[in-house]
Amino acid sequence: MKGGHDDSIPGDALSECSVTNLSKLFPADAVDLKWMQAPLISWYRACKRDLPWRWTKDPYHIWVSEVMLQQTQVAAVIPYYLKFSHRFPDIFRLAGADLQDVLMIWEGMGYYARARNLHKAAGMVVNRHRGRIPDDPEAFQSLPGVGDYIAAAVLSIAFDRPLPVVDGNVKRVLARLMKVGVPVNKTSSYKIFRNLAAAMLDHDDPGTFNQAVMELGALICRPKNPDCRACPLSGKCRSHQDKAAASYPVREIKPPVPERRQAVGVVFRGSRVLIVRRPENGLLGGLWEFPSGDIDNGESPEAACVRIMREQAGLDVTVTSLLTRIRHTYSHFRLKADVFICKEASQNGPMVAENAAGFDASGSTQTSEAINGRGVWVSPDELDRYPFHRAAAGVKSLILTAS
DNA sequence: AACTCGGGGTT
DNA sequence: AACCCAGAGTT
Image 1 (tube, rainbow, N blue to C red):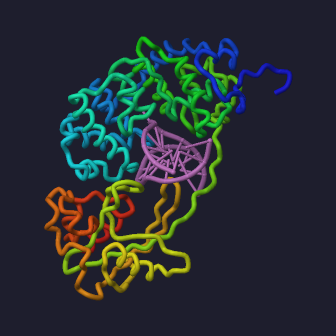
Image 2: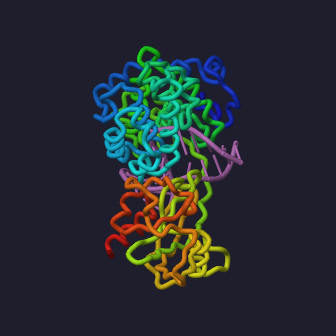
Image 3: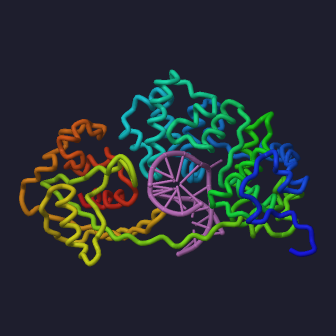
């Protein structure tokens, strides 16, 4: 860009920048983002979607919606939000519930740490704050699962606190509006977007303003095919003026994710099938599945299945047949799994419960230690009492269909 | 600052 | 298929 005056923000522009020194990094008019408040809020009032959580200012319900909306699109969240609100209508009901019941409602939505953290945080709010969600950013953000975004979103919407939200929508809108050249998916870029978001925030109605920016990103300033003709900000949008909206935001290219191969074992004892619960933390934590594990290098899928059934359930089995093959894409790896029907070689499984008597009707694990904390034999019609992750749910459906 | 953590809607 | 979503916790 020689000769011409270029307002765009180069990718190497800044290592540090605060709201106060934005003017040193940006041309003077770049820092003045207040002009967008009126047209944006006006557009929002006219065009906003009718979403369930927009009918309340109750901080608990706002909180629940914002947690669900992390990395999850609005359309996917709506049914979960409605079910969750019905089952846990206030923070006391959530705090008093069993985690397994919370995961039951969350089943299939992914990122299950959100549910674990929300449940834990609800208990902390009840115990420390008598059920009142703190309107102080530091106190609220000290709760598990409450980061910069959740704190700003909930406190601005429910308590009118002037805190700027920075999510994928906000970063995309700002990147195009200001031609911000730093990658939106790099940690080091976060401060730039947060400072720009702080500079544009409407302190008179921060909750509405924050939602308006995000709504613009979702409906108009979309990742693909932005509808610039309908955008209330296009007149002063730099990438629109330069016909470069498609070039923003800039994104760091990530290498392809690796593939992981697993074996899964389905074994019946009489009419009951063995399921196991994953450890509370980590991938798919607290959810149920059929015994499964990685296939070692050079190991056959069948041998891996036999080994996994011995390691996880203390069961000696032989592989009878291949039930199905699973392909599932996670955030950081692709899964290919062979699902085998197994047969017990001997009838004593010392590490596994003989039946489901150790579990109550809700599927909670009150006597889990007595059965190695992992496994339980259940009849197929009881499978719906346990939260399964998506890949395991496919196997569950096959079993239900067959029985 | 990179990595981990799901699942699905859009294109 | 690739992209990306109202991100947060861990290392």
